[in-house]
Length: 214
Image (cartoon, rainbow, N blue to C red; front, side, top):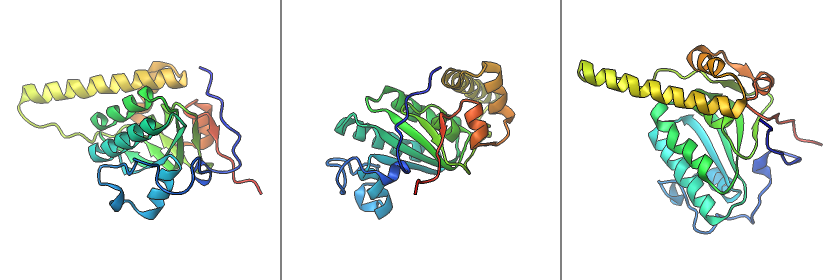
């Protein structure tokens, strides 16, 4: 798989507004509304940049999905998704991944800090270039975060559903990276943390972001 052409930018994507300062018209996105957004988040949003940080649970995935859809509706210009997350439960990530794949606008993913589990999958499945800061840590290992409850038959069905989601994620990652499917499955089960350079060697990202040029 040939990685997408990456622009030769002089600095990190959040330093380069593609629009004048001020929120993009009509995009006060995430579900909690613009009044709840810290100034820093509002500034990033004005630059068509969203930030995945903390646990990637249903709420976080829903807010990011809403933000991406609204930005895509405003313009087909590239969107940047910054990532510093340890991931979350498997079922929560698929709406976000589907949105990224269906958008007109390419979504560049950038790991700053860490991307683990489902957050690493979001990083690897970016459609507009996949980058990591030099000190970033990336791990595909998906922790068991979903509690199974109910009778034996219900627990069995839940377990089968989670296994099918894991297989679907492995297929997506194998396609995006070019790694053998069995290698990806092993990484999802017990993969060790990778440095940015190691993630580049494993084709989970396209480039390690260099420091800002003087």
